[in-house]
Length: 82
Image (cartoon, rainbow, N blue to C red; front, side, top):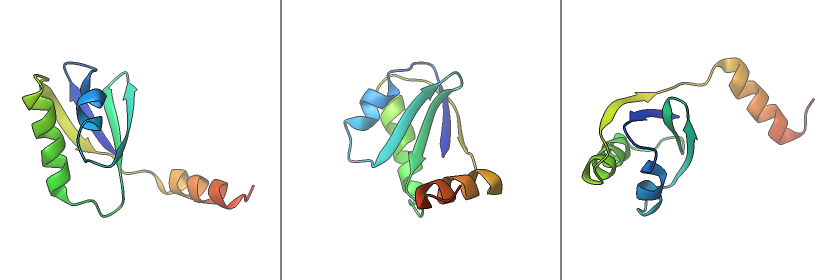
């Protein structure tokens, strides 16, 4: 997940208007953008460019790694394991 701290919460509208494949959540710290595994770093730069060109100040872009426990729970929930 990519955590984006920015000045405006209209970022999802801007990103959804591109060909960037991402799931976007708006939270208290800004935008949470989930990209597919193996997404090239150029996509992160493109997200930044889209936001800045759209007039949104970007204060921080940070990749957030899921903990092993969170990953395990995500995988087992998809498999129906409880």
